Length: 133
Ligand SMILES: [Zn+2]
Ligand SMILES: [Zn+2]
Image 1 (tube, protein in one colour):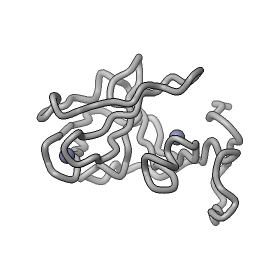
Image 2 (cartoon, helix red, strand yellow; image 1 turned 135 degrees about the vertical axis):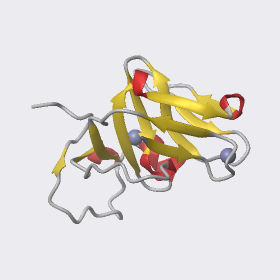
Image 3 (cartoon, protein in one colour; image 1 turned 90 degrees about the vertical axis):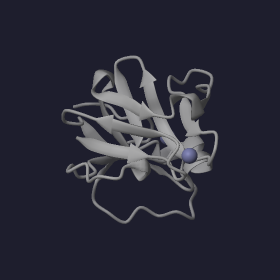
Image 4 (cartoon, helix red, strand yellow; image 1 turned 180 degrees about the horizontal axis):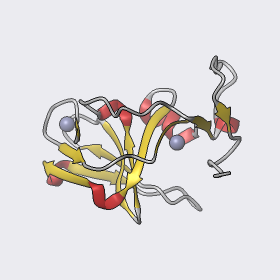
């Protein structure tokens, strides 16, 4: 079980089962909503349950052509990721309270990152969305 919550504690969620990946997203939406980039934990949508504060979760709709909403706590503004759209959850790893026990595997949307932020690791980089091999 991996637990997560927002900064003010109004929203709490739990993830059962194994996440499929942890990665870094450098898209323009993550840049603005999360600081500079998001660390995102991805897994099966049915493994994630909001255990408290569903009513405080507000969302910003997907961009044109995009698929992910951006959920946040309307009390404290904590970026939560996309908690329940389609088959997968895309949770902001910054909101986790427990160790996900999975290491980051890649960077995505690096084509959208600003030049002043340099990536200094050897993880695989995707210009746009992650493309499974
Ligand atoms: Zn909150
Ligand atoms: Zn992003």
